[in-house]
Image 1 (spheres, rainbow, N blue to C red):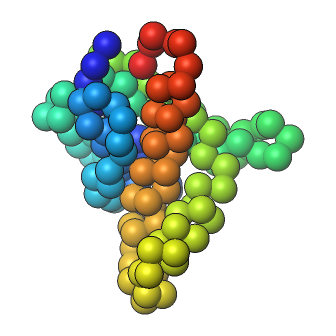
Image 2: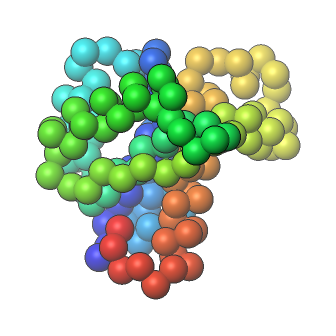
Length: 145
């Protein structure tokens, strides 16, 4: 099944977004949203406008495999999102994506001042987690999104 995938790096203040191409090969940054009461409605509209067929939300797993307090917040967000859309919403381990995002931006030559701009790391973290998801699905025999 073809169609775009949406990657979400959920944060208490900001939510980073990444969107795949329709063949689900490449993840690109798709912006940052403020985490406001209208977030779910905004995301549902984004899903519809961009013909998204699967949503991948980063789950902050702890080293022991648990989710902790932040994970519970993400699970509540996922439930609210799932209630607002008619497509699958799945999770992906986002451990270290923010650290990796910072390293990727540094390697790409982005200046420290630019990296500190609100949302830059959130969008890159969403892009990295979505690309990892896409790469894993592409290399598996799993026909599901």
